[in-house]
Length: 81
Image (tube, rainbow, N blue to C red; front, top):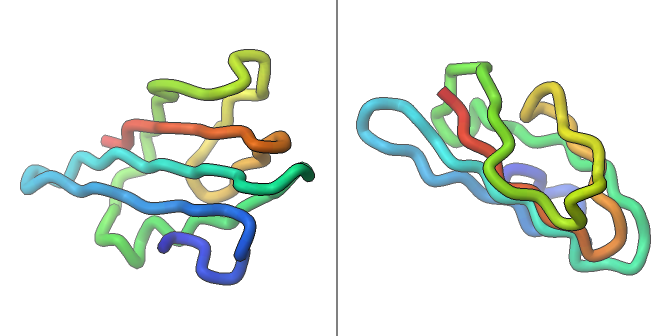
């Protein structure tokens, strides 16, 4: 879990041997949630973030993987290099 303090959001990372990662954040609540993702705890050192998928598609793309605001039942998947 990248944000163990927020019980409404499931967030995790998959890190490849070369250090690239995919980060997933899922808001499981009916309210807006802002999550603080501790990507360094997953061994991620890079900071370049690219949104792979988000739902709803109209949500604001995050500038970094450190903090993401998810709408109700929203999801975000990002690639980090």
